[in-house]
Image: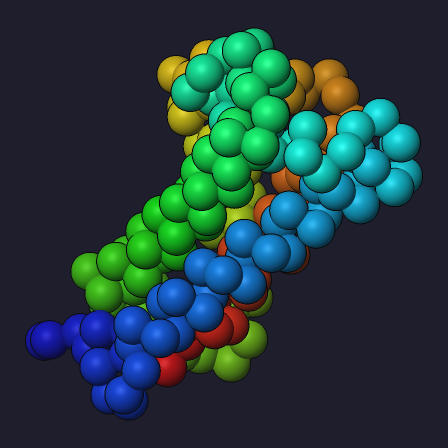
Length: 163
């Protein structure tokens, strides 16, 4: 049985992908800025983007000014697009996942666990391969981010790309 691809039955699959990636990128950076800039008062938005760029450049990213801020913005958007694409490809490949996504509350059933998976993969697989340090499970940030990724990353992706 051929599983319809996300966006195949309606026009605009690419537009939904781009929209989902953009929404997730904006929501996620807004969450980080709210936590680190407004609540904790320990950072600035440019410094958050430099911290993202530190994944490639290490501590030198904090000395790079606008160039490393821009690199952080690009990397953040690439990561949001990548996780959005992974979700779409998974839905296309696995008919069971596609059926669950299309079911009642399917965006919640698929998106929230996916957001948790995203945070765990970032923390335990991707960030350790970079030039920065992942959040420790002993920190408040780890657990807040775990919950956030369920609601603010996985759920919006599933809602937007759902047919």
